[in-house]
Amino acid sequence: MTALYPLEGGVDVRPTVDVACVVDVATTADYYAFVERLRARGFSECVDEGAPLCRRVFANIRVDIVATADTGIGPTNRWYKQAALEATSHEIAPGLKVLAITPIYFVATKLEAFRGRGRGDYQASHDLEDTLLVLAGIPHLREQLRTEST
Image (cartoon, rainbow, N blue to C red; front, side):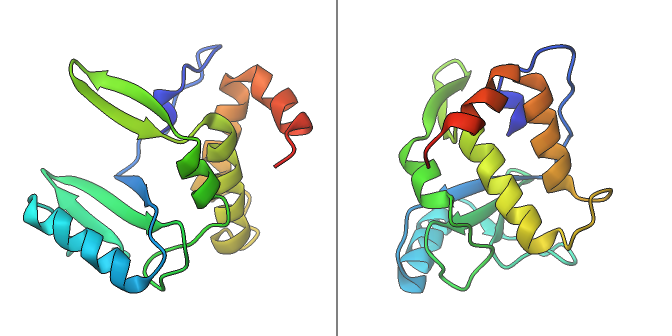
């Protein structure tokens, strides 16, 4: 995700093994209906040891399908709904565009994830590491975080 943001000052992104996909669904049934549509397009369940229930695989890419509402499948995050609403389009290859959450919501979702799953481990948390990388690489974001009303 951080690779979509133009980071300054030679800040490198952390390679990850998965991509998170935020889906605007309200119920567990809606979530599974969406997953069925993915299955019809070639996604399969991830069978990696320790993989979360929300993880699917497509062309060897691990995709965590997370919902804007608490469906009981995968992590939930109070920022997902607004992050999805304010996502911006990025062309990642000619003719291939993706919607990605903005840097401010990326930081918000990562801090919320750290609060929930980080267990106060400031040294080993990838969520905190990703947050610091984005803040270091996008200097104006720090001021935006101070003044943002959401």
